[in-house]
Length: 209
Image (cartoon, helix red, strand yellow):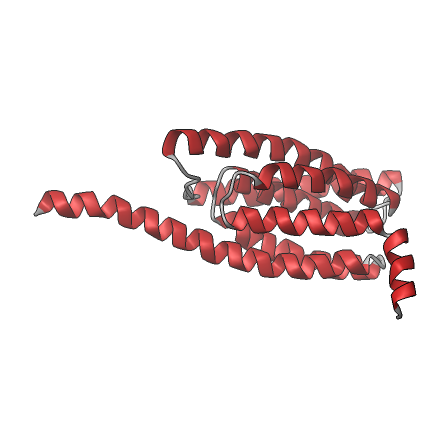
C-alpha cells in the first residue's frame, strides 16, 4: 500500500480513524485517573455511535447511547471525588457487587439478544452479550472500581474477533490496543489502591506507637 492508497483509505475512513484516536486518548487518560478523560471519551462515544450504526452493529450503536449517559455520570462522579478528596480514588468492589454485575450482564445479554434478532442485527447474540457486559464495565469504571479493567480485558479480546469478522480491521486493531491499555489501567489502579491502603495504615501505625 503506497501513500496514495493510504490517503484514499484515510478519506474513506476518517470518522473511524477519529474514533480510534479519541478512544485511545480517553482510555489512556482514564488509566492515569485524570478528570479530562471524560470529555474526550464523550466525543469518542458519539463518533462510534455513527460508525457502528453504519456497520449495522445495532447493539454496539445502542451501547454508545448508554456510554454517553455513563460518561456524563462518570464525569460528575469523578469531579465530585476530586473536589472532596483532591484526587480520583479507587473504590473497592465487594463480592455482592461482583455477583450483581455479572448477573445484570447476563440478563441484559438475553434480553438485548432477543431484541437484536427481531430487528435483524448482525451477530445479535454475541454483540448483545458484549454490549451488556460493556455496560457493566462502564458502570464499574464510573464508580471507580478496579474490577472494571478485568472485565474490559475479557470483553475487548472478544470484540477483536467480532470486528475482524465484520471487516472493521482498524477498529479491531484499536481494540487490541485497548486490551493493552486495560492491562496498564489495571496495573496503575492497583498501585493507586495499594497506596490508598498504605495511607490508611500509616495513621493506625503511628497511633499504636
